[in-house]
Length: 199
Image (cartoon, rainbow, N blue to C red; front, side, top):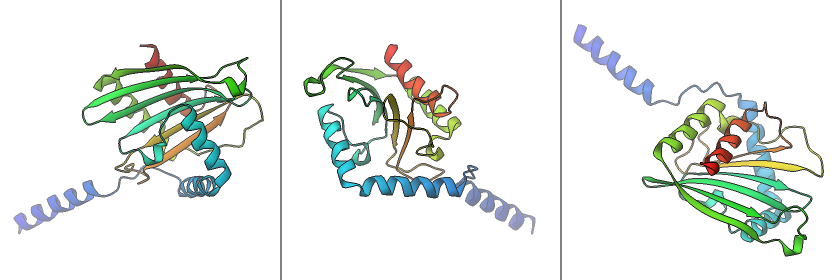
């Protein structure tokens, strides 16, 4: 009898460990995020602009990427210029890609890539970023907040995990902030990506 109780206890623990973890996520936030992303995807003119801009800066669409990737784009709407920091995993190697497009005082039509560098990341650097993703709950952060204007910079952080996130089960997430405050959770991730470029 004791053996049966022990076996049932072990099976129960094994099953519960494999079940979806409780991440303390507000279902309303997830529903709102899904709604916003769906609305953006159905906006054909917005999607066309985004895909054209990605082509200009020679960047992939993260939604279709096969490898786990995270990209921060700091976009200046006045000059249509940007700085892009993308990290990606390919089997057991990790890379950081940095690109700068256009700049202040450069005419929009003359904008080109002014910087395009690639460097290897260590497993430690990749793991540190993964830990920060968990600690900031990136995958459940609101896509947008009620804070925007026409000019200034927008910080867009995208994530693609082909296996799906453990908490949300989503493969893609994006967090966009206009002129973000340093106190915003997402800024920890953004600053980490910019720091990786400086190493």
